[in-house]
Length: 318
Image (tube, rainbow, N blue to C red):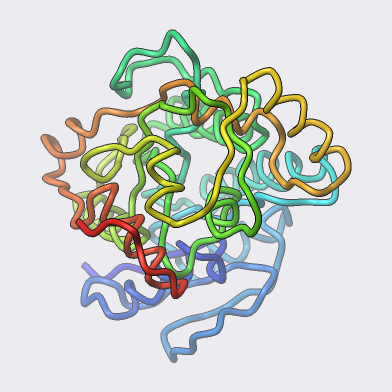
């Protein structure tokens, strides 16, 4: 069966990579891309719509193009205000799901995040898909949690639609931009709490794309954690990246981060330190057991690949 696949956020890091890969896949006949920015790549089998995923005419697009499957990757990690960011992310996801329902799309994948679980001191290591989503203090985590819950509700209310929720660890790669990648590549001395030793997992953008295609091929449904093997502490990440850092008492680090964030000097809020202090490492056993998914990159390998793509020589090789 030849698929017509809709990809939201087709000009973003994961969306662009996924669409390019789908166009080379024999099982995909066409890609219908949706984004506010025109993608950099071209193909006769790519139909691009410049539009906001919150627009109501999205259902008409999916129906007109006879879309079989949709992968929702659109997500704003930065906006002019917190309310604007939440509106784009949460209401955008809500509209995408409603468009899928109206257009009778049979398979939907929502790109959530392992950060939807939230970084908490009492989290078990690792977290399985059955663990409650508690979000966290980071806006990114909060929005991903809401989007995840929306997808779960949609799946319950539309049992005829197969819905897959992917919860990747922090994604790294040449095409992905996030607060984490920008922080790693930042200049100056990084100020971090001296107890920033929570296990961090990464997954390479190529492995996220591989997972999407594998799940689509199997028409899988349900929630799946995905991450590269192994883990690193944030101190190790900074050392491997060659970025200078200064360890501070947590209360001091949070206070300085609050001041810098309010002044517009630091992008992420002080809550970023929760992520490097408290665990949110996930189990990937379910994806391996049920779908046969094994990432090609380890957590360390994803970091090394990212650094090399930015012209940085890692201080440690895999």
